[in-house]
Amino acid sequence: MNHDVKDLKLASQGKLKIEWAGRFMPVLELIRERFRKEKPLKGKNIAACLHVTTETANLMITLKAGGANIRLCASNPLSTQDHVAASLVADYGIEVFAIRGVNNKDYYKHINAALDVESHITMDDGADLVSTLHSKRRNLLENVVGGTEETTTGVIRLRAMAADGALNYPVIAVNDSETKYLFDNRYGTGQSTLDGIIRATNFLIAGSTVVVAGYGWCGKGVAMRAKGLGAKVIVTEVDPVRAIEAEMDGFRVMPMLKAAPLGDLFVTLTGDIDVIHKGIFERMKDGAIFANSGHFDVEINKQHLAELTKKKREVRREVVEHTLKNGNKIYFLSEGRLINLSAAEGHPAMVMDMSFANQSLAAEYILKNGQKLEKRVYNLPEKLDKRIASLKLKSMGIKIDRLTKRQREYLASWQEGT
Picture 1 (tube, rainbow, N blue to C red):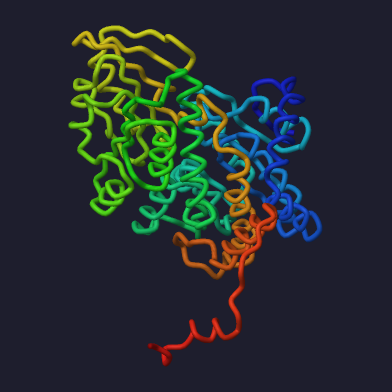
Picture 2 (picture 1 turned 135 degrees about the horizontal axis):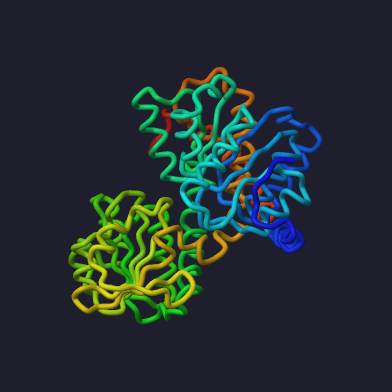
């Protein structure tokens, strides 16, 4: 079996972690049971580019139960859990190409290895696999029925491709499902980002000033959790509606240049480039810490940081101290990679349960309907989104009301008023 992982001897450790995560993913387990019986993905090849974590492992096991042939590679050089990659190969017979800390060349070597499966479905997190397929492996496009995309950054890239007429097959924006972004982005990112920062630094959040760049669902989650831990939170935004929302949620809102000398801890979550740049570094106080929780390592301008740095040293795992030419020492976490995955374990399994239920059902949906869809980005149908929510409620032992026939009729009518 083809694979490229760090060490297969790590498999036993990985298997325990995969099983532990699986205990908290009951919705995905229900889907897996159905997939095992019905085999909706039988004989289909899936090229998956995702964070190789315990939760992703449970998704891969579910897809294989549905009959799929899978090749998995990492969607970030620092997010791979090597023991999980080893277990997927050794214990579950899934081809994996992922090693934590690979350089850029090997990162794309792994993506190309995943594409060698000649996929019918692509499953991406950030759209690196899809963009590689469309630019350098175009000979493989004719076999692809459709794809899925896990994260905000990837959806933005894919919509840009569709707008340019460059997208060659339909893609389901899993990220835009309510049972994904309302929970994964907000509660998952909110908790795991601070988890990564605390593990890397042992920094006390209470009493500190935390600057959150971007008030999308991920930014909302980080701001909420930082506030809950006792921080004074500042939000920076470019969108006026989100800025008003942040203000009314109780946070201070200001431009990043004004926030720069106030912040003890900075977290970027925008999906855009140069959020923290030369002018910000120069205004930061001595001892400021900064990290990124957006998908790519472009939100913090590393070239500008290098130009301002007189000397640097690694003071803790994932923490590099930069002594600037102005004499201040500032601290850069995880090279600007996703702090929640590079310094911690990513989102809790309980929230990824819904995200990966979306991925499973999206793969099934795209196989059934891909030939009828246009070459653009779609949302997962609302009925499937609601089904996932219902299954999650059931797993939590929560019951809710149902509309009566009379209530449904009222909501469907326009004749009745005051």
